[in-house]
Length: 102
Image 1 (cartoon, helix red, strand yellow):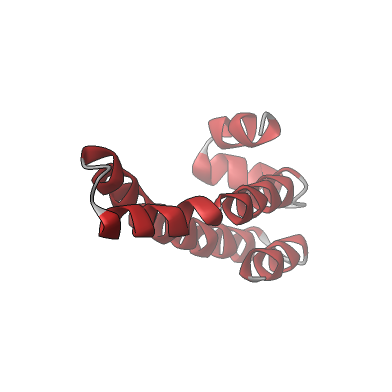
Image 2 (cartoon, rainbow, N blue to C red; image 1 turned 120 degrees about the horizontal axis):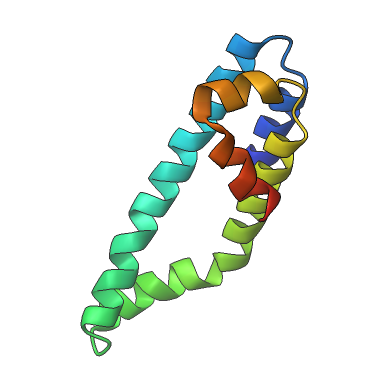
């Protein structure tokens, strides 16, 4: 999966710049996924009788386990990264506190 590939790349990052670039790419991917998911949820709950909105939300709902796995891989990769100090400096220590409690 794409998340596992990013996790392997992050684990193998040879320097802070490379690790930061990988995390930025990963965050962009996560943002795109959740940006598409959120409106589907809103449309469905605004009108639960709308069959098209329900079908779209069902699609995302069926993929919820995959999204949880994606987030878990992301959290584990970040917290186990050898460039953790540089990542904390760039993204802030709160990122790691959130991921450690994932």
